[in-house]
Amino acid sequence: MAVIRSAGKRVVLYSPHTYQLLGLALDRSIIDSYTIKPPEVERRGQKTAGMMKMMGLTVTNEGTVYARLTGGDGTGLYRLDRAAKRWIPLPSDVMEKVRSYSLIGSTADELALIPATPHRQFVNLKRIRLTTLTP
Image 1: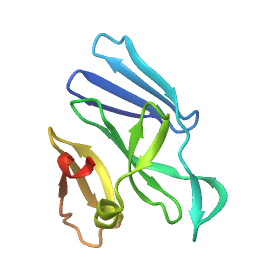
Image 2: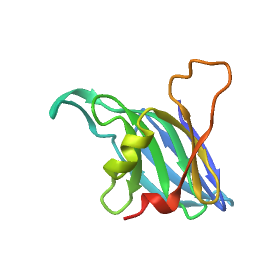
Image 3: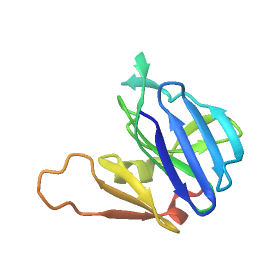
Image 4: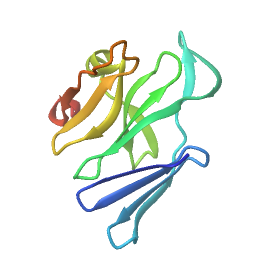
C-alpha cells in the first residue's frame, strides 16, 4: 500500500512495491521523482535475503524525508539522500535512542515517535528535534 504524507507546500507519495517516491506541489505538479530501494537486511554484518521494510514515513516543511525501516540490525530511522538516491541511517547516537520507536509524523522542527510495540492502552509520544539529526 502506498504512503502519502504532506508538509508545507509539498506532498510525498511512496510506493513500497515499486520503490517509487514522488514529490508533488500543491498544484499536483511533480517536483521530483526517485526510485529508491531500501537497504538490504543485515544481521551481524552479513547481508541476508530481502530488503528492509518501510514502517513509517514523514516529510518536513523544508522537504526532508524521513522513514522508519525495519529488518535486521539496521532497524531505525533513516533520511532520504536525494543526491545519492538512497536511505541514510541517522547518526548512531540518535539511532540508539529511537530504534524501538515508530515514526508517525513531524511538526515544524520535530519528528513524532511512539513506542513500536506499546504494552499499555495509553501511548507516550516522543519527540526529537530535527536540529539533533544534522551533522
